[in-house]
Length: 265
Image (cartoon, rainbow, N blue to C red; front, side, top):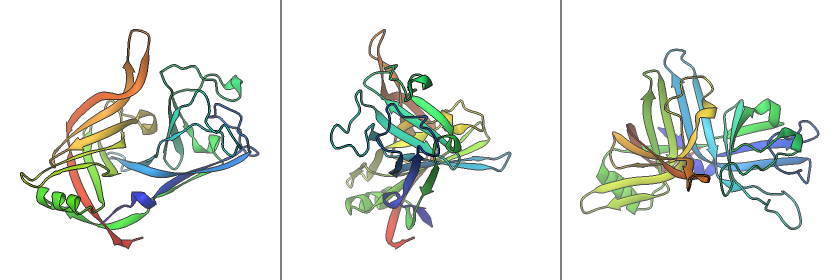
């Protein structure tokens, strides 16, 4: 049995302004080439029972908007949180400023305002992308006692949640378990980790990449999970921010694996 080795898994996107103009930047890039290597936070595989086709998406670790390679003044102002989701042919960028609808222009200004959720085809935007998911042998932990013992021994853990949408789409979400609660007296554990990828539950189309939300997941049993999704969250009548506030609860198949780093690829 193998699982993703998230500590050694990366996505990379390459921008070369001599070959393709920038479509996602909010400033003029200081240089014409950049390879952005980002650690993979989570993976989501969606399989269609009718067509037999499957799509895989990966979530890159969050970073901040920046001027790459300058001597001073590296952070853009106003600054945004930046996350990218990639498949082999599509991308989805999530940007969050101090409030929604900030109105930050793209570069060049003729492209209009910078969207908070921007998707497109890799071939139109990047010179190339790569997704390198390394794998590692693993042992499935079958009981709460086994999970708790591995947790307290500081073993590396990976989680998987599986569920079905519309009796057609099988969803599998894989992620490193960064936070785990463990009670060795009553043998209770609880995963609380993220961010992960969570698809829109109402989606029923092949363009899944537009449907994703960032989420955290909690579970303490094999058949139930609760997710909290990032969504525009009102502060008052005229102001909202992106915050983890939308709760989804559902029947799932949850698995905890212990990674075996002596048998990694």
